[in-house]
Length: 105
Image 1: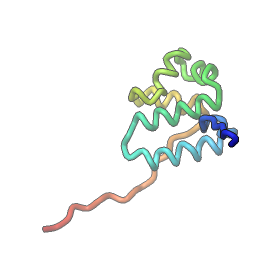
Image 2: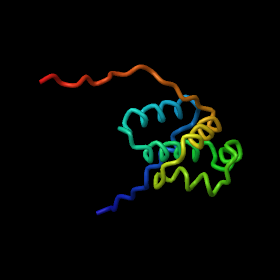
Image 3: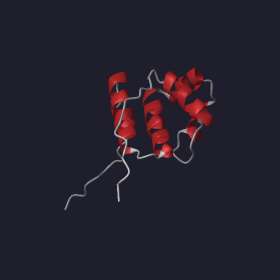
């Protein structure tokens, strides 16, 4: 019987243009459920697709610091997230959402 060989899926290999990167980040924001480390990891995927060295330079961070910040093991400061989003060529948007109303007893 022939063995099946598998390789690890890397989303960064499939983020080829700014529209795909923005759509990926939007999907991750919707799924994160308040998990900031999850968003940091998603930004890391996009940064790897774009090129970590260039993103680090554009964000004013060292490459090593960028890797650590976007590993998903840490929760970066919001100022750092904004620098990285700008360096990625993305924009952060907000829209009105549903606010849960307290149940009446």
